[in-house]
Length: 253
Image 1 (tube, rainbow, N blue to C red):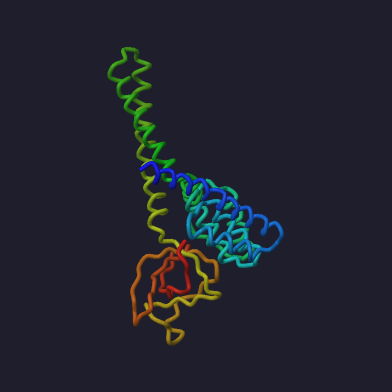
Image 2 (tube, rainbow, N blue to C red):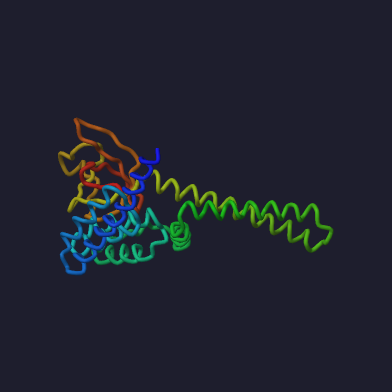
């Protein structure tokens, strides 16, 4: 047993420098503007383990290679893994603006602001907020029923009500972010010009063409169906349009 444990420890210890060495090689290649080499190393790392930082680095490398669609894809993946990655968020917005890709959903400024605030925090962080809010709510309830001081009881009542609302909101936000991370229904258009159909099949004439989407556009997958060996996905755009797109034309975030 001890022998196998020593072998395992040896493997773990020797694996760390290898990973670090690969990272250093990729960074050195990137700094030397050997972007194809850096990308090759980063993508090889992604096969074994991924992270927000790694996806961010891959996004930067694709951007340097003038591949905006893949850059957007990996910036989105970086934010999916860590919504607080401000560097990835800034680069994503910058790349979209440079590629003239609009994500205007037609929502009000207030609703967009709320959604942005929710998306800046991970599901785990929202869960922590929910738990803390609930524990403080219980403390406020105890204070309301036990305390004899009127001021303390008022604080317990109104504070408890506020904390209960915070707990509910935090739970909703946590569920939303968890579903977003696990569901992975968002995708990026990778085809240079994707033609979407009003039905799940290749449009035979212009009457069956719903609309076209530019490379790098973000969509939400709502349904899927296989027709004659081809997978078609029903997607929703930022402005709430629905149509069918060939599975090969997009890549899931």
